[in-house]
Length: 467
Image (cartoon, rainbow, N blue to C red):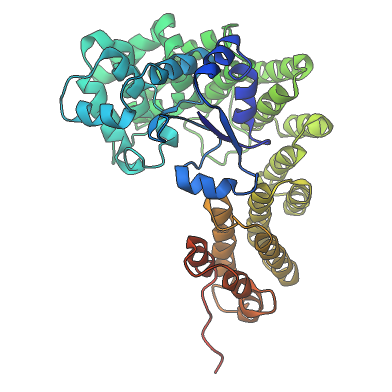
């Protein structure tokens, strides 16, 4: 079993609290070789390219010959992940083979339908289906699921709805809306689909009721009532219960502009956010859980329009976090959304300075660079110096042009192109590309047959020669 994650990643920390420390998981681990690939280990990003893993966390179960059996749903609660793991360990077929038969109308067993339903579709990375085709495929699988596999059919349907819009996936009608309302009224059925309900309530509501009106109001109310029950379910982790609350906030602001700074929420809901976040902050003693929950709590406060309280929570937890740069980035994001550009850049700069590990530093550096170009494009010296520093860091990392690190550097290259849209910074880009220790020199040190070289050379295109 390959686990792909990072020290700073909140859902990765959540897995450490809820899954990896379970007695039944530890017992099951005797049945497989556990391989932990931290994204900042030497060569990790090259392995990421090899195994087609991108998002943190990703869990992949493989056969002894390296054939991929299934990708486990890291967003599900631990008992559900354990059931999916057991299906993979039971010696059956790979999810790819099962999908081929299900798509062709061939017989598929009950456990195999469950494997399809609980496959990590959001971390598939086009292994089974292109992202654009996923909603339609999930809808087809849900419709093909036999009546005896109602839970699997429902999960596939909800997943399809969560990824649907007017141009893809499921077209809503009154019968489908009623089917979802009945599910939400059933506490047991809703609990079984907890992760989809808490993560995608607003998306499913929009898919079923694309326009504001009575249908949308009724669905949002049904979701809110179901989410309140999940909030109160002590069998769920703190992170999952907080996720239910965050989803309630998302539903309450469903008709507001996405960038609405102070949404019109009820006083009761705002107080509920305050109380839950304060309780979590007070009660959590485990460092992994704190990294997972407090970052979500700060997000919940900001989404509720409680910006000062979100900032205060993050600042109070900087000294308690093993990855404070993640919290600093959130502080930068808060300041940016409130129009405090200088403060935002200070936090992004601090976050980059404190970040650790080659892939993480490139990722945080690219984030800082993007903000700098967007918020202070006139600071040409600062922009050029930061780009040069990031290229210098890439030169020291043998896997800098693989996977996440490559995307970070491509982001820098793209932002440099935007910054120089009118050619006013041609000389700076020439220095960054062709100067001593410029990107062209870095690319030239890579072997011609190394796929990284083409990636490197594509980050900054040559500029026209001066007349």
